[in-house]
Image (tube, rainbow, N blue to C red; front, top):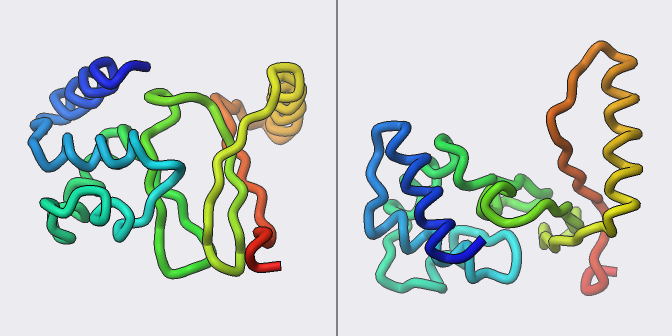
Length: 145
């Protein structure tokens, strides 16, 4: 999705929730879009020094509520944030339980299809109807080993 398409989609999500796509929210979305993966609040602030911590926190909360941002909770003290999957692409996460680092990864189409089918079978056996999946692998990153 292009930058303009992401901005239009985020604006629509906000408008549907009777919120505005303010300059601050646009800057947060830009930081997330240009990050190398899920970002901590400190990383968002480092990307755009014009943002204040309280403003970023409020804007992330609203963007998460409207479905534009996903919060990833890790083993460290800091949540990480990324644009919601429908604004980017389907992917999964490697989460280091030692340092909290999060790395995005994707599976090839055949593996993704097999995983999706297996998860639907497991969910169905429990009377659950799955609409999508998110896979977080927990372990230790190369730097922490």
